[in-house]
Image (cartoon, rainbow, N blue to C red; front, side, top):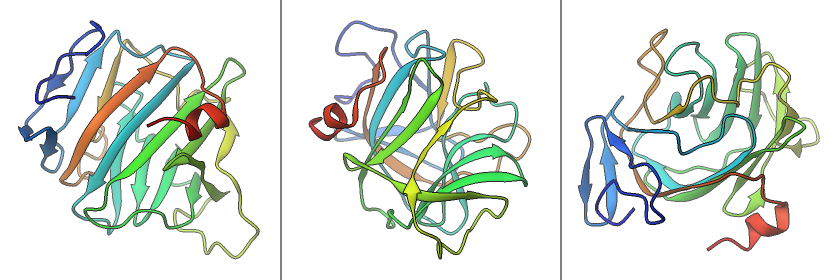
Length: 197
């Protein structure tokens, strides 16, 4: 993003839902954000963004794949990254990696086999899967990667939403800043993610 909503490579523009640009950063309030139609493939993709949140004390929606429907998707939970796979039942949560107002580069991929992998600052993130949204992280960490059999990280429509929560809860969102959003129609490898600048 360069102080506007246009794609530098001629793709569909982002749509603004309440935030504004300050310099070359888009600042959003709680449950404000962006969406884009037709820019992100439904199944196989890489999504890369540099973002921060002003508050990290509960869930903050990062990506809503379900057109603001079910309470699934990609969040921060406190200072970890979390995929909500089945609300209240199944979560995949990383070790603490976020800090208030500190930008992090988040990259997530979904490949043709449905395997979802998350990276923070170019490094694969590690976490645990379980029914508690806040696992104690006492087990050996495993890479934040899972086979997306329920398609919670596949788009349900041509629209993807950023930083705005679903209509089931609509309060799991916080103010923050995003410096860029990049989308590829392939799942980049770990080496390719590490080399992104």
